[in-house]
Image (cartoon, rainbow, N blue to C red; front, side, top):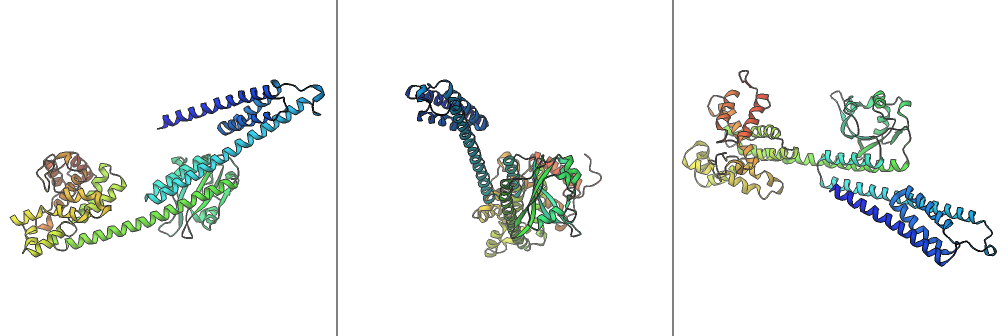
Length: 489
């Protein structure tokens, strides 16, 4: 897309240049053959001057004004002496050139200001859309700091959120930044009680420092100087009437910010505050959803003592394995719901069993009827979750967590890569929990070495061999269970 945009940009400016030159030629011919230097036709020169100012800025306006002044002096016919104006011709031409210059530069400045305002509105609109459509705080804050840095042409921008340590001290933790070095960001936390400027900002004030080298109000004044920061602006991030963080604007020159810059920074800070508030509401809602799902899973497991904790342990194994695979944060959160609800279909089988004798106990106690009934719970789980829109992405976890890699599993007998990734992950996570909780079913517990041997043996038949390698790496690293000292590499 960028090469296409560059070509359009070049074509647009090429067309504008040809238009300016064409208007100069046309106006010169018009004035040359229809009047003298006092003719009103000279005003047509303002058209190419304005056009040059709009497309090429100050330089274009100045060049066009000089060219217009030269053309009106060099190529225009001179009036007869007896009809000459009171003012000398050179003075008249100089005054006209001054007007050309003033109009051109004025139009250039107004055009630049209009473009800057348009960019501001465009950036604020994009951020407002992101705030309303995205629940990922880091994405929105990154968009904000990038936009502020680009529009103000400054050295760096940072957003820090207010927090408390174990001793109750308030500090600003790093949330997101643009333009700051790793060395500067790793300098340590900003303790509010040790930073007088941040104390004022927490009170709701916008603070600016025109020369960092001449103030001792910062906790890390030396680090600021080493980073090449000479001036800065700090504005509060507000949510529901209270300060929740700060936005810092860093410049490489010692100067005060203009009122326009302060206005723009505060506008972006307001959007950041809204984004942080929305993210908090989403996290709270997500946590409520997840706790409800966990309660539902516990209610299901309460029917069988051996099943208590199964969903939670599968979730832990799924988290570790999905992170090792490289799933995004969003995917890991979704898989957490899927792992917790992977046996939700047993609720439907429970209802069926209550109407048809001892089917539920047969399902957990063995027997042909129990085995046949067991194969239905993934399908029943899918039918339960499909109407819930936000849970649809994790239906493969519920439906395919008993599919074997060689196609011998159920309910659909899928094979190899035909089994969705989420299903292959769930198959391993589910089996891992069953192996580690054998003691609850009367069997001796397996060591980490035995568990690794089991998955080695089942790789390519029961389990995806690539995922088995990742699981073994997780186990050896100790992310799931304490590993035995006898396990080799």
